[in-house]
Image 1 (cartoon, one colour):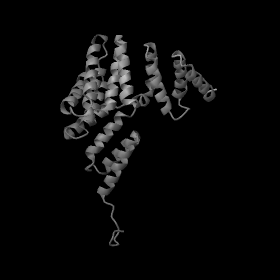
Image 2: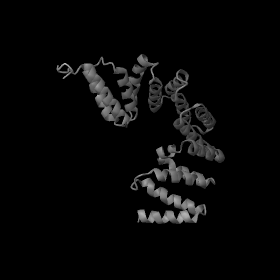
Image 3: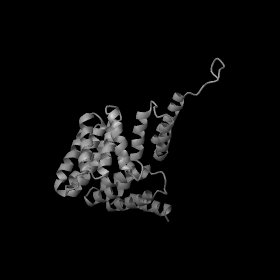
Length: 274
């Protein structure tokens, strides 16, 4: 009842808004398949909803994060969305998503068009630098490795976003490993740790490889720093990486002649994983 004692009528606009926020929450929580189903139902119920543009964006975002990726559907929805919303806040992210879909279809010419459009039309956003990284990723020829490095350098220097900067630095480090420029490789792994150590935890599937290549190139101290940081943030001892990290760190301490930490590490390992 309202303040006058009359029954409150749930309007279509109210249901629309409630549904939108439920869908947005599903996307934020990573439940992309649920979000896609809810979006389709919402648009069927009210094709003229005020949230049609937002639904298109959220569906594209969800589709791009759902495996297997339906790149053709992303292109169809994305191109239609961009015709009506090319200057909106979410446009640069949609341009990246559409570019990725073309890349998935091995159409590098069209992918490049959408990546370049991102950097040209939205130079002040983090997606502009992300688009540069994407262009670098498309260069797989060993003969053109310097061109890929140039793209990553541009992104690293220009971005103000820590995660994009860390991604660019990681790409640079891997390219410098490929070209045999190991001091530069180590330098960029150090830059990531100094500026955004959480990047290593968020991308911990790569940490063991990074630690190994650092060990092989006389950067054991940095390998230990990264390993200890990630290990401390892993809350579950059941996560396979925890066991491997604990063991590898103990070996690195031993190699670094830090016998006390090595001993403690091995004892801890045997206690947790008998």
